[in-house]
Image 1: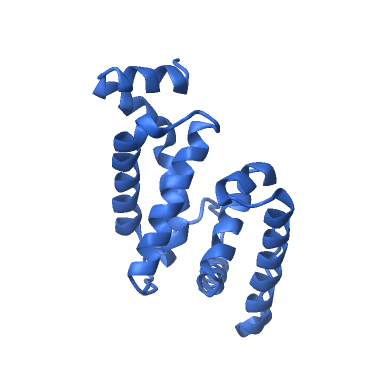
Image 2: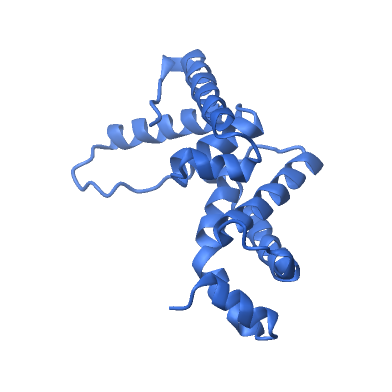
Length: 187
């Protein structure tokens, strides 16, 4: 398998098809990040596509100072923030759709309780500021280390750590205020 720099070199030399390798390698990561920020499947798909179009157009500006995944994530972050600023986000229930349990012995009551907990968590998550949602996604979903998060956000590592701690505290506070006092522990 080719390295990112080899693929980039091929693309810059005119091999448009080589860019597919970049898309295949990073599409899921970018899509998941965007989806968690916008909570809408079609918007996330559109934004993901826009990010890769922009990446293709701006590939010659990629200096290689950071990993390609970091550069792509920065493009995705900026595009998502622009999207959220331009359009008042209206919460949809699409992300709360029932997902059947893998457990064959699960009782219907347990399934309903789990669905309600997911709904409560998603509702609380949507009440967080964009910056708090973003840092929780980067740390918990993408499992990035704080040094990489700091580079992506353009802040010091200590600032990224403090922002994550505050985001967790705010998330716990919102969950506690919600009906049932459900508290969800983040890593």
